[in-house]
Image 1 (cartoon, one colour):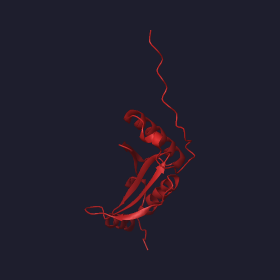
Image 2: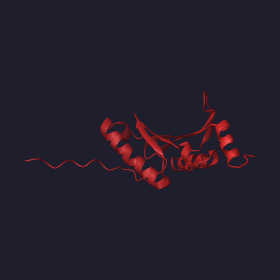
Image 3: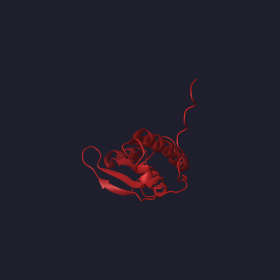
Image 4: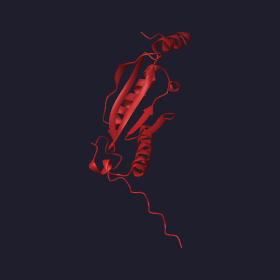
Length: 139
């Protein structure tokens, strides 16, 4: 005779609580429980955001959301980062990179006790060429 599986714990903080500090309860959970809860909370964040096509990962104690270049022009992607940042109680900022990507728009916040990192690449030379080919002026 098998015993029924124990249901996973439900979050004690509702997803509507947008910005909460990392709690001792979140920090003391097992890695598997932590990852399961983070994935569940990530799904809640994506549902609240209402944006399709985001790339989401969870490593250690951080949810990472990438707004890929296929989701629009730089200003559209920056607006998506700003929207997600607001949900995570944060604000986006520019960050200068090195290599083929010249700049990034990033934000770091907290969603239901989990750290969240949100970013998109701004390859300004490529974006300028694409916009010029489409007949758009960046100024």
